[in-house]
Amino acid sequence: MKKLLFTSLLSLIGLFVSAQDEHKSVELKEGQKDPVEEEFNCCKLYIYASPARNNSECSVTIEVENNYTHDIFLFGRAYEEKALKKQKPSIRFHKNSGGIKNIISCAGCRGDEILRIEPGRKRSLNFENANHSKLELPMYIAKHQQKKFLSSEKYIILQRSIITLDVEIVSGSSSDENYEELNTKYEELMDELNEMPFCPRSNHGISLKKQQEPYATKIKDILDEISTIKKENKWRESSEGYQKYKELKKMLEDINFKDYEKWCGECRSSSGSSTPRRSHQCSYCDKSLNDVLNSLQRIYIRLDTGTPKSSVMEEVNALHNAWTRGCPNLSKKKREDTSGKSSQIDNYYDRIVRK
Image (tube, rainbow, N blue to C red):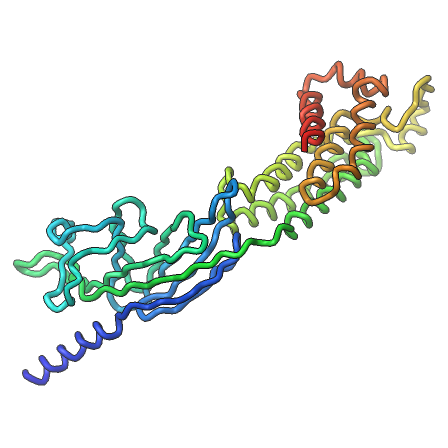
């Protein structure tokens, strides 16, 4: 019996010794996709730094994985022992817990929550404005005691282990290779649509649906990539880093194949029709409002990726002159527009001029 008590005492002492306070320095990259992983005595941490918004500091998300044999508690506020006893299940302190009955709160918890992490499970903490910060994770290691005869279910806090992280966040690269790659795919797609319109004639060799199929697939592939990037970065619709992707997504979703239907030369010849001569002819005569809108949208995105404004304004002003007064054909389409594209064109022109 004495031997058993001695062994139990040694185990308890071993637990208290193993759950020591730990301190590490961590360097994070703003907006990183893969977490920085750090091992500690009672847990493993997966640490992310989100992109900064509106010149504010970054927030840090920490996933805590409990790789210990007991539950881990973190507290959103400094609970008193009496309040913890009233919890269901009750939370109590072991008589040999070492005088830790003054709870230290964790800023990463939400409000006054009591966060419990079971062995083998993960839970997330979020620290706002965490650039150049010292983050503290006061972890309370507790043994789960099942309900017994004349004894209710409870958690017994055995020890506290404070993990301190000195966080340094470095700015992410100003260039976004993923975005630039997707934008290039979009521009190539639009070039193809403008160069190879769909022939809608019923006796054309390839059906309209078959002509459009590969382009519909390309649009879906780019949209899927945007969705994946959004998920990997844990962006919301309002996240600053997502806005240019969101705009690109809308441009892709706004592509209407009807705007790119035009009889091919072969079908026009076989029908015996001929295109009447026009007194006015310019490079904008055959353009639709959709073509003009797409051109301005692409220019706007190029400015976002670092293209000098001076290098695009000649094209922008030429387009503006054509749809306002320079090309009667295009001006007529603008006047007759009921789709709202005309106002979108004006809006993009103004945004480019003000940029």
